[in-house]
Image 1 (tube, rainbow, N blue to C red):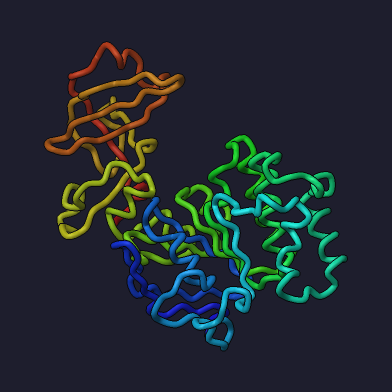
Image 2: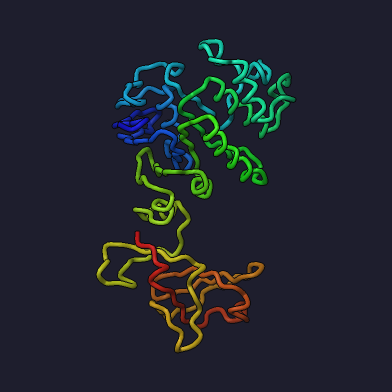
Amino acid sequence: MSYLSIKNLSNSVAGFSLENICLDIEKGEYFVLLGQSGSGKTRLLEAIAGLDSSSGSIHYKEDEISEKNPEHRDIGFVYQDFALFPNLNVEENIVFSGRYREIEDAQEHFKDIVDFLELKDLLDRCIKDLSGGEKQRVALARALYSKPKILLLDEPLSAIDPTFRNAIMKKLKEIHRRYDLTTIHVTHNFREASYLADKIAVIMNGKIEQIGSPDEVLNHPKTIEIAKFLGFKNIFPASLINDKNKSKYFSVDPNVIRIVKEQNVCCDYIFEGVVEECMGITDHFKLFVKVDENHFFIKIPKREYENCLSNSKHSIRIGFDEKDVSYI
């Protein structure tokens, strides 16, 4: 059995349902739950933590924890809004779990967390006087102080200035390794998922739609809905390039589609189309090309396609290779 095994977990609150969620998460894995707002990501974390009642089973190692109280599940939880106690200062927030459970080597552990997260100068501060990044570090410290085996992170980067996002992602990886954690990280940002995850599950409308490695999920989505969520462009019926795959679709990156100017240029697939619109963006053009009833979106360096803005509504040949096609 996996380190954390979730079988047929379901619940329904206020008209929204999680439906038969099944996940197997291995020890030491950084597992990312990826989905749009309102897809059920936070609800699932709350069910795992024991904060929301549900049917089904949750096994931690070989122990079923479905009926255990949250404080007995060896799980740390960091909410998106941090949920710090405003009536307690930073130090009191960090050590709060010591009120209801004994922390082995508490002083040494406290010092290690404070030093690692650079909180020493903030210990006497009121929560209301902290920046967003400081609150995040305090929330992480509070979760780590209880020595959890599993760490749940609910959109941990959503309230952080984008300037610091890469540095904080690196810090999260360091925390994961330093404290020997199994981490479940919720986000709607697939670039964040790509950097952090050992494995990704995509959740939509309360259902798990795809599970796999970052490469499998982010580069080979199982459905059009997942592909669109991940930002895939140019999604067309596979019959456009291969009659044998009429039931499937394909996508091609706007950056790999070429303008075919010469008759002897070789591409696996070449189409005649009409430029519907051309937008100049700093160092490249965005072209929207109609091929029969299909609309291609293309990005092309300005140096490769001069006078684009003055040549809209004209005929054009575009091409791309089989290696650049992603089937859906």
